[in-house]
Amino acid sequence: MNSLIAYTLHLADNALILGQRNSEWCGHGPVLEQDIAITNISLDLIGQARNFYQYAASLINHSDGTAANPASEDSLAYLRTEREFKNLLLVELPNGDWAQTVLRQFFFSQYQYLLFQQLQFSKDEQIAAIAAKSIKEVSYHLRWSSEWVIRLGDGTRESHDRMEKAMNELWAYTGEMFEPAGYEKEMAVESEKIKKEWNEKVRQVLEEATLTLQPASEKGSVFMHTGGKNGIHTEYMGHLLTELQYMQRAYPGCEW
Amino acid sequence: MMATKKISEKEIRSLLEEVKDPEIPVLSVIDLGVVREIKITGDVTEVIITPTYSGCPAMDVMSENIKKMLTAHGIGNVKVTSVLSPAWTTEWMSEEGKRKLKEFGIAPPHPIYKKKIERLFAPAEQVQCPHCNSNNTHRVSEFGSTACKALYVCDDCKEPFDYFKCH
Ligand SMILES: [Zn+2]
Image 1 (cartoon, each protein chain N blue to C red):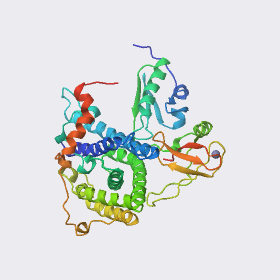
Image 2: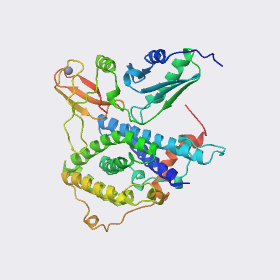
Image 3: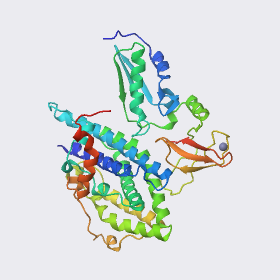
Image 4: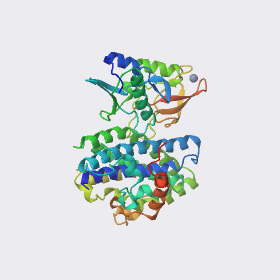
């Protein structure tokens, strides 16, 4: 598999898996408006995933025109196994409570926003087009999640504690975003620049939210989990795929 | 094989006026500004469309309905192609479309206060109530019943309403 295909799948998988996680809130949101908000974000992410998968499928089919079963957006989402998914570990983690869901969305949207700002000028026209299209939606996600991080962090004792707990759960999964996998290195993305800007922006919001970054991370010595980008996932991933892929596995080719 | 009728781009455009957005049935695909181009090459008619939001489920339906509408009018060999670049913006919505939206009870997009991502808790766009025209309204949620809408409420007539977000 060439780097461009792997990279496109990585972008698609991030969006699909976070979209799937957020969709678990459907009907369970804390209030109706926020239930609608998180599922709308889900819909945007799944839309992005479709655009990336369609592109990946065309690249795969182009490089192997003789395959008996050509790749499609559906086969890539529903028929790959855990080890073939290249998403960040962060997006596959269970939702936890509302604080954890919101904080993860904020970490991810801030990253995606900075990444797509670069990718919209990618030499690859289709990646650039998808990034330019998506960045408008990501702006909403970022604004929404930043506001929630501040509202909860600088809220009641209870909400503040929950945000602190979410920080402790999630922080060790943020480093993977800035550790380029082999296939990313050829994409001319400036990871170091994204990392620097991400840290600045995140710090601003956390300060306003009266939340503290873990002291160890200041020195950069905190342990960071990695592996997802290369298909080594947490145990949660298999369970997530079981649900996501159930219909196509049980009734191959089913449509409605 | 269906006989192919010669038909002009203008005629196709007027047929597409009849293809509506399934989620906002007063708007046609032309009003919405999703029809980018119509290409007639030999006996192939290609309609090039662009999605509003990446995940908008109405796009597939619109694309299907464009095909059905043209085929029903004797145009064979219809192709609907979706392109992403340049990205769709609400500026492509026709004035006619904005008028119809308002009549339908949805506040049309107006780009006076463009949001800036750098600022948190930026003031929401000032949106006019489609029922009583008051500007005394506030945003309830950035996300509404569909991807393209936000939820507002009027502080004068107290009616809740949808706002078609500026995008
Ligand atoms: Zn009113």
